[in-house]
Image (cartoon, rainbow, N blue to C red; front, side, top):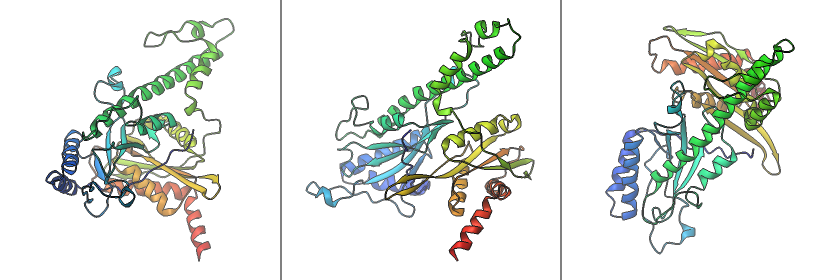
Length: 383
């Protein structure tokens, strides 16, 4: 899969700052500017608390572009923000299975050109995963082409269109996610049936040929079915051994427990293999937040760029926890490393202390795995 750009915006979520921006935009005498303000206000009402402005210190300045302005002399965009929303609304994939998880959230970077809404906005999905599944180049490209493809959203100059674009993104993500979830289930069922069939005495092949799944669908036979499912699920194939995982001693606070896990990884394929391996532990799988993780790897690309650092994280339902782990790896300048923290909730809310424990559990795992020795070695070389 082609490497996808991992765009990072400085994450600011200040309701007062956002409201100040909306007020300044909606009260503008410029029609385009006030339209942007009204659209932002509507998006905040639909997805409360989900808009992150790209400016870390000041309200972005959004001024109208003079009709005679030289395009080369103006910025490429007037406003950028990130919006987080569910991959689908109620009634989507999760409605088909009462035991299914809630819709994973997706992060979309919205870029408004200087002449918006006379010119179309640009949308881009951020991060590298939707739930447990790696974003591929097809989904990434389809979202990027939302307003420039005949299969996307029709754009009418002068009409704000971000919300329609976000609805289109959800319509792309839901079937993409469904296909991978079904392929994963089929691969798991075929593997289980094949394993049982191989373990039966000679002459007893009923399981491999006639077993029916809980859903009532007839299972395909033999290793061919398994291979077909695995081919469909090629992104989960892991030809290398699962990396050795080092776990920390538990940190206990008011009945909640935190355990860190660390290991070496080469790429996101290793990352997901380790996550799946940890989730095979029933105690970990039953945790409130089983796998909060972050990783940093280095990829050799040759040429002038030489080496590219790739990183990503997953909060696993604990808002900002994964991003804090990623920040820890950035500060320590560690590469080729995955760190995962498991939290078991004890029934008492810990407030900000939970982040302190998550960070400490991660450091403990990194130390137990010998990764912090690399940090000391690097510092010694710089002296």
